[in-house]
Length: 432
Ligand SMILES: *Cc1c(COP(=O)(O)O)cnc(C)c1O
Image (cartoon, rainbow, N blue to C red; front, top):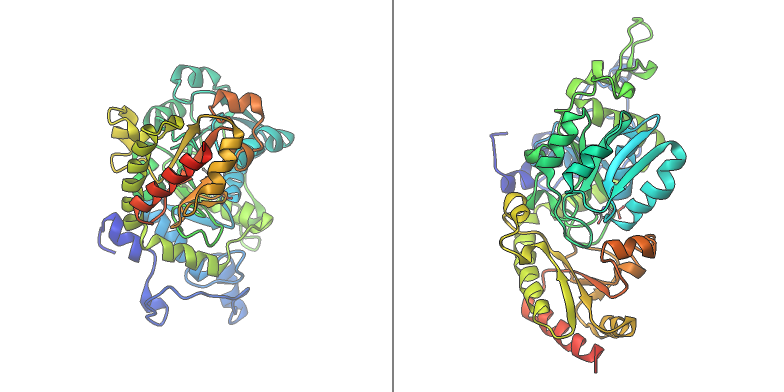
């Protein structure tokens, strides 16, 4: 394909209609397995020598492959893997980078399930986390790097505070130490921010959110920049020879790095974790994500404009103590550097009063739906401390401003004056 811009790629990248009966819309290959023709062809398919042919939908599927190629092109990566949820994308990435154990540096103000997994799940498998209050405290991050540190993990825009990670500075620290920078870029989506352009090595999405944009399916993506050197001695999982990669008859052996070169990381995610642990995306779900992606620019442009207006409305409200939206401060250096087209459609605010007022506010909204999701075409409202981030103990929540008075909004595509009127009446009713 000619070297197109983002808005052309989100519609066309990764799809070659001539390979699919010239169907205009990407076909949904709703099948578990694919015919192998004869034993010679079967050998070529299962050893990956016949691109375009598939054997079993846990190993690959044409609909899902279009999504994977499209997101890789949008990000500027060498490959991508689609999985059944954002949590699977995170889990497989952490397992892949720290196979056999090690340490990872991450901020404490991250998505609730991610923090729960980092604090309470991975340590039992020998993967431990150094969690910092401020990931942009570069001195502290650098000091935490130990010989067995395997990666720095961040959310580009934190959930729900919208704090922005200084990706270029963190990438520099990581690379100096011979470790990759992994970025959960769910909040901004690739339309507003492409972390590879700032030195990141691996990008993760919960494409359940803004990429899909309609709240109708769960999915996750891992994208590989293909620039990191996995042969620097810190990552034996990529250089150790594996039976499955070799050719028994020809007595040839291979490692992920020797066989796949710059695609070693993403190939290993597919062959080790998607294939062996499952958590495969369904073809219909991949289709929904592709469909949503076609309108990402128009959705985000409108949602960002509305979110900015709503943030200013909340700043002026007598019932609101604080508004958390990095886009509010035009002098914010990190906004200027990383998110010049907007911070995104999500913001949060702290309500005055007590949890009774929170309950009333949520009960009174008529357009905002009370549910734990973001990035939908519908506007959503939630109280994170009791829902999306309930796994976070109060001690940690207090350090990150995540108290029970916090409300998170995800701004949809409704008329912004209706959304403001809805908040206006609900805030008044909450304190009546
Ligand atoms: C929702 C979310 C996840 C988890 O994604 P699922 O698709 O729900 O598994 C991870 N990171 C962030 C920032 C999220 O908002």
